[in-house]
Length: 148
Image 1: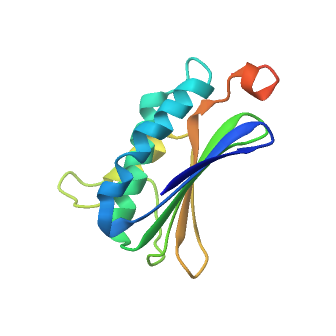
Image 2: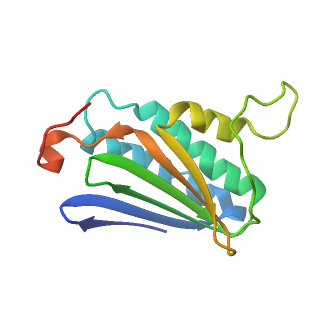
């Protein structure tokens, strides 16, 4: 399921699907990246944003079966924020290069390399990964000049 909605003049998006049916996530990423290409400033890292989206969703599918909520919004300062929420168990993550033969840890490590920032929060009902994407809102879309 996907919906787009306007909030104070900028598009935000919300996607929801079950992690055990990962095929539902496939259409979300290209739609998300298309929206970014239409809204974000030139010079934004669209490939990085796409990789971040894919890695975070893959991480949930692998480690936290159940519902996934993905939302995106432009902050007032023009920064794009992506939140991926699940109902899986809490986990801790310390950014580090995983061992060569490690089965886990690469996805979030890649996210830390590509993102402006990554934070993980837990609320007793699941986890939320919040990422400052390597994109910013086009000046004409936000009504003010980009500072990057």
